[in-house]
Image (cartoon, rainbow, N blue to C red):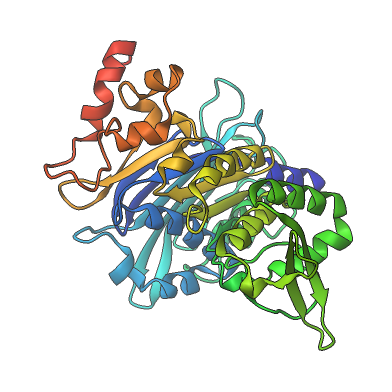
Length: 421
């Protein structure tokens, strides 16, 4: 089991394809870097991509039916004017040196509710071997190859699930005899999508240490209590970093009240008495919460952060981007942003621009593939400046004419590098 746990800790998504999910009628993000940032105007689909990861995570944590119902079922989920199932295809590695595994999930709807139309796991054993599926299910029935390293010639075990709305990976992944399936189940169920707000961090929760920050950040005092008791050195590093970002800040603590609740307090110089978190600045609380998430001693395999620039001084954003990149040594991050200052701390391969095509559906273009941008960066230009000056060519909310297609943006670069078909 330790090997499976280690695999979850090191697993990384290398690419994801999405079909028929709201505005994402046909979108592919590949290759994905350890830090991936989504950029684009309002309504371009950034939050929808973010929600794809939330939806998949909920399918494994609370079940397909609940995740489906929360989002309005097919009426609200399937791309307008489209038919056929909603499809996700995730390419990932359990470790840097391990084979690429592809997870395919197609979800359809019948009168009684959602069903898993098709679900499979595929990998290739050996450098030149042919890819094969070691899990293959349709409508709640299929086959799986068990064992630590499934081989194509190995016995295929026929399984029938209790319901067609159940995910085979989620069901079979609970058994030790399917370690590769189990690793994927734990990987996706462990994704953490953050929707932090400063107001939520100001609460006074019941006392008790908690290992991980919640999606809204309302348990921030509990996590600080946990770090103080179990990881004092890690908490000291968080406070040291925060003091460099917030002038005159001296100390943050979670005080236990007589009624059993925790009160977050912040002390700044030159004053002797701390103030309550409810009176602290939004930026201080959000920066503290982000650092707590990024310095997690046992981080989730994927962390999502929406618009970290809110309430933070622009000068802090390139440094926050660097904190995010440092955290990718232990986890994978996905961030949405509108801030050129956050972009200034990023690299071209870490940024995707989203925009709507003439039909109203989301398209995505990796900045590293846009003609001229990598060359500008090599000569010292910052991505935020290049974006504001229009060098990305797509994703500008003030564009009056139609957006160019991704092929029009990328093709000249391919022709110059000899990659054109």
